[in-house]
Image (cartoon, rainbow over the protein chains, first blue to last red):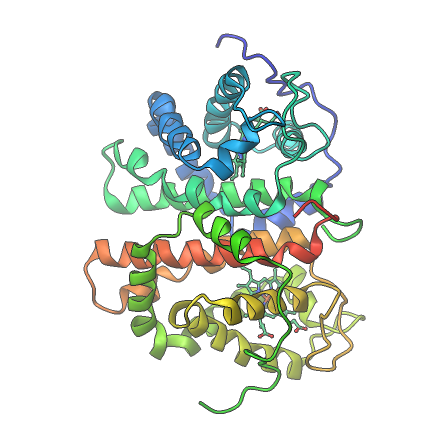
Length: 192
Length: 192
Ligand code: HEM
Ligand code: HEM
């Protein structure tokens, strides 16, 4: 795998989330051994489709001024090198979501991704002067597009409909799990 | 419809969310006319199944000590009359989600439901001495169980699989939309 600028998996500090909190959160999204199994199958299916998935998502964000705004500078102009740099890491995230094991290193990097959307670190990784912060409501809202639009790509693997549906459920649960983690820096003290 | 104690649809203050914010949030969950159409079909399908849906959800929450905890008093004992009172309003919420129009009154009551999970109002409606607050991470996490487990109930309407899937997508989008609204009181000032 060639190096992706700003992708720091394995190199970020520990997330302020305990193993027990993490386990209970997995239970709360109904994560089971079955999801573990089917997300690994999704890993095989999605591997060769990353660019097409990104085309779809970037196309949709690009067609929504109130969303592409967050990839822009403070006067509202999109920053092409920012969009490009994030795109590469976003592609890697798709793979990490379906192929990596959900251990402490994974949790730590998921947490880091949350900070990069929040005012704590937004724009810092790429050294860009961008809108400072992505609102919490949009972080939650994106569970729908990211969760739902993956289905046709899962179908391309040629597996029967019930298997596709199980991969899809695992995908949605994982996206929900990650957004729950990303909400941490946004919450008032003691409310996460 | 008989009166449901503590159900105050149409009687709560205005949510601190503008019409424009609400519209953009709907766009961000990819809400379309199609969802509007299929959620009304889901209204027909789910109407007679509310008790069975609640049995499933309450059964699942009941089997998870870290979740049923939030229906308890401060020493950890579940409060039966609290569970019962909330169950009635929860049933009404299922119907409101699929049958009511998403206007200002609906938005205001959705916002109120968020406050009732947050320390602002938790336990106040039923006058119970309960755990003060439900963490934001579980609010987000519940998108998975509430979003996914509705499928078999939608199937019971006897519609073809592609129609069931469209009703399901509308349901998931609406749950995501509502949790995005519920996250408002949890966010640090200016971060929602
Ligand atoms: C389910 C919700 C979301 C997912 C799965 C997601 C995924 C990602 C990923 C994987 C990255 C790169 C992380 C890395 O640096 O390794 C990223 C960065 C970014 N995303 Fe998101 N995202 C979500 C919500 C949003 C929303 C709502 C927006 C606003 C339009 C947004 C805009 C951005 C921006 C601007 C960056 C660059 C952040 C930086 O400065 O480092 N994302 N996102
Ligand atoms: C997708 C997420 C959730 C949905 C759709 C949901 C739905 C509802 C609804 C409709 C009500 C009644 C609202 C009313 O008073 O009219 C309610 C209340 C309640 N829910 Fe949730 N809920 C969610 C997350 C959670 C979580 C994570 C917990 C924790 C286990 C929880 C525990 C409670 C409790 C204790 C109440 C009573 C609050 C009060 O004191 O008024 N809910 N919920």
